[in-house]
Length: 377
Ligand SMILES: NC(=O)c1ccc[n+]([C@@H]2O[C@H](COP(=O)([O-])OP(=O)(O)OC[C@H]3O[C@@H](n4cnc5c(N)ncnc54)[C@H](O)[C@@H]3O)[C@@H](O)[C@H]2O)c1
Image 1: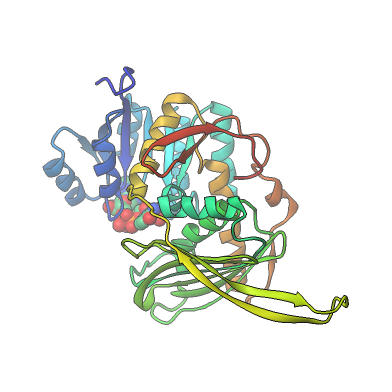
Image 2 (image 1 turned 135 degrees about the vertical axis):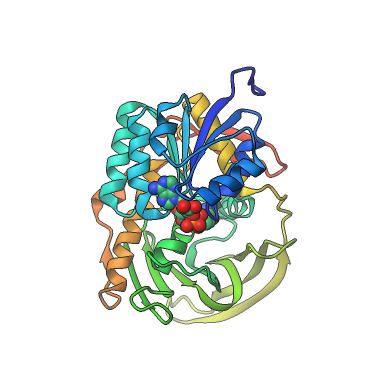
């Protein structure tokens, strides 16, 4: 088939048609520049469902069979423990790869995937969905504009009842979202992390975690994660010296609220330590954030990067940074909340000149590929 660009559509294969896979399949099957050709799953009942919904898509339980075909890009939507093995096999077969979050179950695995992809000149992307979320992009623009002033701290919460996982804890399941949001919005890499939590339902598997992430410039971020909460919460609050902003992803029409609130110090004498605190209670601004399905943006970006050779916004190196923080946070979780440093090797990974296109949006619904020079993100 020929896509919008006049070039033949990119042949895509997906592995893992469980909870998240069908959402990816829906997006790829509707994309003009992509042909979803294969779906792989070990479970025959899942494959029967694919056949019923997408009769033109080939199905198999044999991943190698798909790799032997002419698919150009492989999407991995299987449990985390399998990401490394499947992504590595796909890369070594010469396929471009998008892996669902987090990239891998360890940084050693992630490093290897990054090196293979770079050596072979293949696209490696991780599904950090929130980096393609219009509200989170607006949040980043607000921070970048300087409107908030100096950033004091960030508070994030991702809570709900379920979905309990049996082989990973709440940190590995939910924190990839918040860590990628924090790094993307603050445009800084963390320097230390600590975490505490509890395992109330399944012994040994933490279902609640409180993660403290330290960033340069004395920015403190706190992330509360839970599978055991009565309310669905997906909120990021950023408190700056001039203004404060709340991003509430579960709100329908008011995802971003900018509060002109704060505390100012007024000096009545020329002595630095003699000042009064003046509380500012200003108005609230609610910028319009047009809805664009983040997963659709993510899938389109992947196909676009495969076709143009541009480096994805959430490329393998970005995915690896998140895995390194997860690894250290998990160590802290099992070590009484000790502060774990994120060393210099971590801090420099992936920084420097980005030579590819970085997806951005003007929030009128137009997608723009901009080329930029940046540190980290
Ligand atoms: N971006 C997001 O917001 C988001 C949301 C949910 C899940 N995810 C990610 O998607 C991935 C899948 O999660 P899920 O909740 O759909 O899991 P799931 O357990 O519901 O589904 C996984 C599917 O993969 C299949 N499978 C397992 N091993 C396989 C193998 N070796 N070969 C072929 N098929 C195999 C299983 O049969 C199952 O159908 C995970 O990485 C998860 O973190 C991302």
